[in-house]
Image: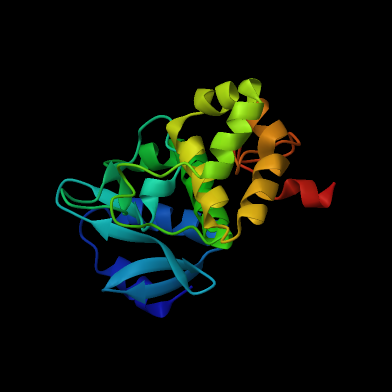
Length: 211
């Protein structure tokens, strides 16, 4: 816990209880608490993951790379008109935060996994991600695989495209694709639980490591 965050929360006259609840969830997630831009900020291995904010009509939890998250329910909104990366969750009550605790933790867990994968946001990413040639070739050879990929949610498709494309060598890209074909055919995202032990379904929380 960071002393500057303690002082920040003590000074709040609006949304204090809500911000304290969000802070507790951040600490529970295992992120490191810091104080940046005069706001509570939470990081993973030195990388900014999420930041708390307070406005007149609401308090928010803003994910620095929110555009990469699998947001099936469209709960996230862009931080601003011209935002290409940050997306936020907006709250107007403590009860709302408590009801969405699992969703918040799932987004945090996915954000950490994306950072561990080396996910990057490039200009125009929000509009389109190129399909690597190796994936197109795999689709030609296996139509069941192609159909399964296109049945995934847009967020899950983006995560796979980022992971496949991040490999510099064609051989590595093809190896990654082959490895994940069974998972994709099963309708699973790259960050989804496949063992059934996760406490943060559908996301993987690492519970399989303690079987």
